Image (cartoon, rainbow, N blue to C red; front, side):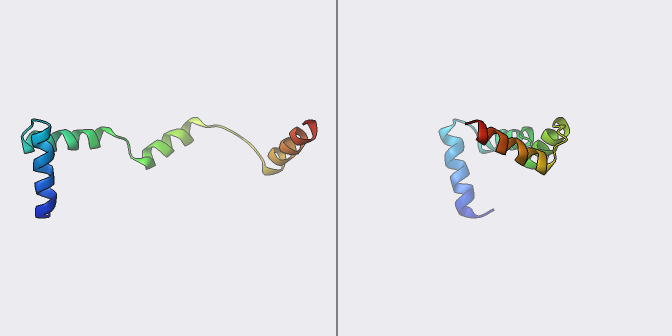
Length: 68
């Protein structure tokens, strides 16, 4: 870790009235509790069950435009 990064973390910890160790632990716990984008996408894909064909979607869009 660079000296600049360490100095910034010390400042942020002091502003939060925490020790550097407590501040770093809280950051790591927050990071671990946040799902990665890969996990979020996988969850979404597992919940979505659409059996659509491109020609059907385009046909429905065209039909909607004709009604307007």
